Image 1 (tube, one colour):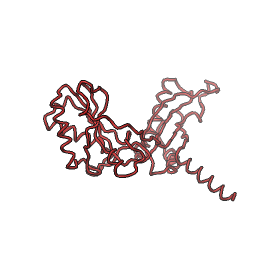
Image 2: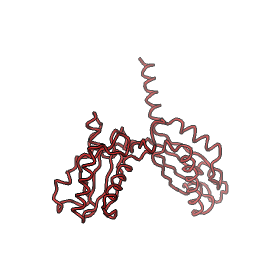
Image 3: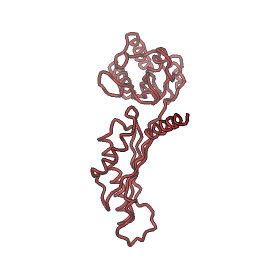
Image 4: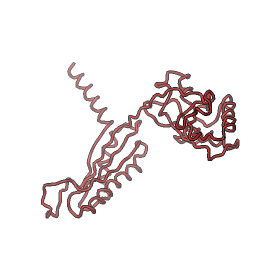
Length: 277
């Protein structure tokens, strides 16, 4: 039994280690360019990550005390930037976010007259954590057509009835065209109302990312659908100065986890927010 437990413990440790890592790379005095040795060190650590996930990268640049504080602050910034630029080019598919921090000089007890400085302080620390943003379940909105125009609240979102698209595409299903035309008539009758068109997608997992637009190959489906509605309203004579649009990806599903077609259909929706009334 003990060997079995040891194996399980090792696997758990390995899994956790592959989700979050932290390591340092070191620079020569006054330098910030990445060498092949730096790149190899980064590669050795990054290749332990699960390529099916995305990660948040925090890059902290440091220096020792040699030279002026202003010079060292700029040098620490350049070191962090060099690492961030390399990661963005070489490991773009793994990056959910990347943040740089210029920390400047690390405190030291060494003599300020020492021109050699402190080698271990001339570094960049790279902290990598798995992107564990989870979608937040939202309540179903009130239907905008059921609310008196005087009671519509600025900053509040409302549902429109079913405006649905074909799976993975910016193409309306036939039954949704009547609902979209209903929105046109509503805006014509109420010229003081300004709105933001809000796109949402279904079928998300344990993160709040957007979905694939199969027509364009881009991960921007909620934005593209909201833009489609926006452009349609303009084509039907609604002043574009009354309209904005935004994609909300899978950040606020009505149902999560989705248990079937009905939940997915409900999450795959368009809403509008009142921006002026």
